[in-house]
Image 1 (cartoon, rainbow, N blue to C red):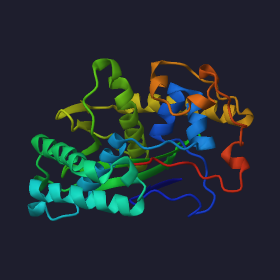
Image 2: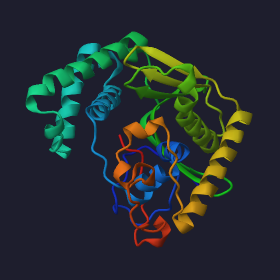
Image 3: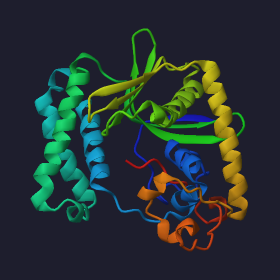
Image 4: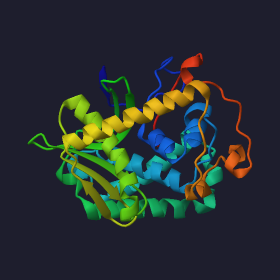
Length: 291
């Protein structure tokens, strides 16, 4: 079964029970620390948003809306105005963000978001092309039963049929040491596109708006097939742990940024009682990618 849905993430309970799935973020969580995966995907422990995350949401929303305009109107001035509109819309949905970004700090917050948008214009000219899709929800079941879900920032299709998968990042381009981690998400999307359309994307492109650099990768089919086997092995390990709740912590320097130290035994915390794998619940809703 394959579906290709161009819509927004479902909210919990809005569509009834859904099969658990693997998303790029949750797969990265499991690679980093199986216990972190459990806290986010199963326990759903709350994590307060950061200013940087909210700014990233504003920038993504502005760029998505930009491509809804006719090409001749996709000029820098329009994009800058869309930043304000995106912030207003997000605050309307989540009024509590005013506590994160108080009124006195809003202008500086929006100025930084506009700077990221301005950098985007140094990287490409959006008046010269129209994407096939923005914020594209992809869902695909692999032959071995692994269900993949995620959201692609932008999908471009050339007249030749060549596909480019684009993802915006509001940080700086990583060093070579961290490139593989950055490309993991893009290979995930490339595999989904291959299964859905039977075509290997010609280019995977990460656009780093903080420093105006591109990370470009050209996958091949054999590589994506190997990547699919890696995801299958990971999902098998997750399901095995899910039956018993045995998601073990893996301490690393990334723990410094974790919100769940109070629940982690590596930091003297106590793990909450295991709520059970989602299939054992009344509404097994798997968390989606969250912008």
